[in-house]
Image 1 (cartoon, rainbow, N blue to C red):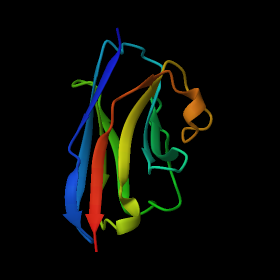
Image 2 (cartoon, rainbow, N blue to C red; image 1 turned 90 degrees about the vertical axis):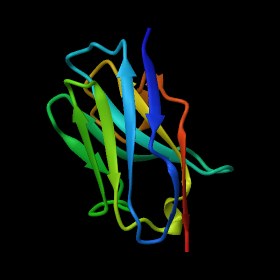
Image 3 (tube, helix red, strand yellow; image 1 turned 135 degrees about the horizontal axis):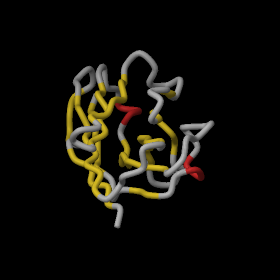
Image 4 (cartoon, rainbow, N blue to C red; image 1 turned 90 degrees about the horizontal axis):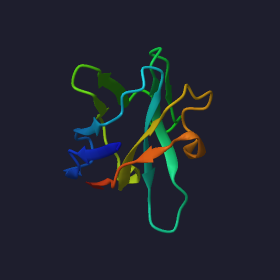
Length: 124
C-alpha cells in the first residue's frame, strides 16, 4: 500500500523560506514521477514542480528561480525548497506520485497517489 505523507508546512512572512517533505512508503517503482501541487479553496489544483526517475524536472512559471524540487532515493523522500515566498504562494500543498514517467509532470491526471496535504501560509 502506497502512502505519501507531507510535512514542513507552516506560516511565514513574505520573503521567507520553507522546505516541504513528502515521505513515500510502499512506493517501490524504479521508473516513476513525483510532483508537488497546490490548491486554494475555490480554484483548481495547480502543478508547482515535478521530477522523474531520470532526474528531469519541471516548474510552474510562477515559482521558477524560487522553488527547487529534489528527492532522496535512499530515504524515499521528496522535497520542495521554497525561497522568496510570496503571499500568492499561500495554499495547501500536496505531494503526488506516479508509477510511470510522465511527459507532463505538472498535470495532475497522470498521478496515481496523493498525500493529504500540508498548509503553507505566507503573510505580507
